[in-house]
Image (tube, rainbow, N blue to C red; front, side):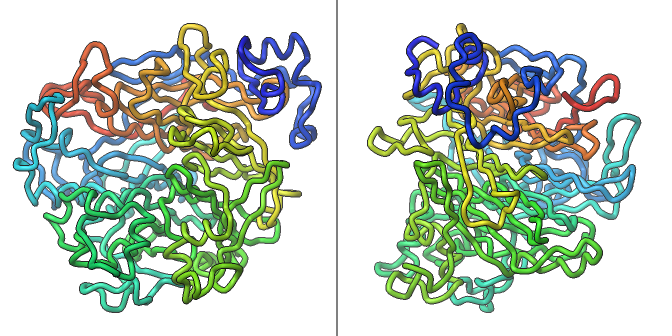
Length: 638
């Protein structure tokens, strides 16, 4: 703990391995006990909650899982989903085939049981990487190899749009594990290319949602950049549209109504241009309102494959990372979400109506009516939820809001005017199902300067992020005042607290960077997946899944359970209700930071990737895949 101010240790609880040893020796952490966790500390809490042996840090071409566990490939990009889907042929791809096959870059996973031995697995497909999907797209340049626009075709753009969205696949229990059902009537693909999706809630039918193809403003084609999500208590799937700005190009006429709005979401001439080759709606000079139709939470009923998905606009428009739900004690549903960009906000939505567990049909439109809030974190450890309601405070015509539709379309602007706290990339926001706690993953923010730090974002140049724990009073998630504290700050404390850099020599394997997705298992334990991007070179390890202690003397310690191949990211950890199976999305293998991978040392391409995981066949490119983890003895994971 050399180099760390004592007060910093106490205040922010660097309780993980190296810090813990010194803390236990000096009883430093016992000097100022936290009022938030005093009631949660278990007797004899020095015993760990997890039993598995931690794996070592490192980077190589394949995946690794903790001893005593198996990790099998369940679904790969291009695998058949719909009956009659062709086998995957990377050299002869078509958009029609891709819309029948498992999409690209799997992300969030939802598990929905439909009987004791059957379930529906819902998987997001966030984005596409053409240079790893198609041959012949790379050319040499002064900076290595880059994408050659002249080799890119409109058909490739159609294939990419088809590879976005969601896959729904039926599973049947197969011994201790689960296997896909190839001919299930439930199997479904929802894509950005052609799937009709209804618009519901306050923005439905609003003038700012209308386009030439949809003059009523009530039906949009597709969903895009599907990152994290959630599962509702009534068994529907929520998928969050995140970085939708990347799909649009073009310039608006001077003085256009949407100029400020588009700027606030990063939409402009600098966006990717390739999708407008396939569909003109992605050029804002042609369809200025089309971006307003993305950035929402989409609800899909996987138990009715003929149902129309709905964009639930009451939950607000921003770069959604997740839509995790919890049933409040009074029966209302609370949905938490983060806006995954630097200096953006944490949100929750509280339904007006109450969940009826005996009448599924009564819950169908619960998410269309309620109150959207943004969070303000105060230095005294209190959190205030600020209502984003038309006519409340500054959300009036003087500031450009003429209705609740304007508020939800420009949720970022509304949250800013209300005084919400800009955070360090809020990603997953996961409520514990029973104890009133909520865990907020803050991935990183290297743009934050010393003069911009605050209690909830205490580090400038925050390379490796942190995790904040919220506590709802008496488990009331609808309350407008919570308590909060920092659970842990990622990166090694051995080198200081400002702009901390991981030291793989002096730090134990449990130290990690850039928390992103998270999950709570059947035993109520927290698991965190990481997304370091190319910064893995500073941590000495590929991304992975970490088990986090949240109580007692071991609070904020962690251990590494799973590690992904080079260039990949771990997404969407999802446990079965019995805790005996774990699904993981391995996204973009061979993509991030392959120049820094010593055995490779250059950018990956279709022809020459840093790894050919998971097939390791010379005629197959790397394929994003879902992995099924089970224990050798059939017991609970971890």
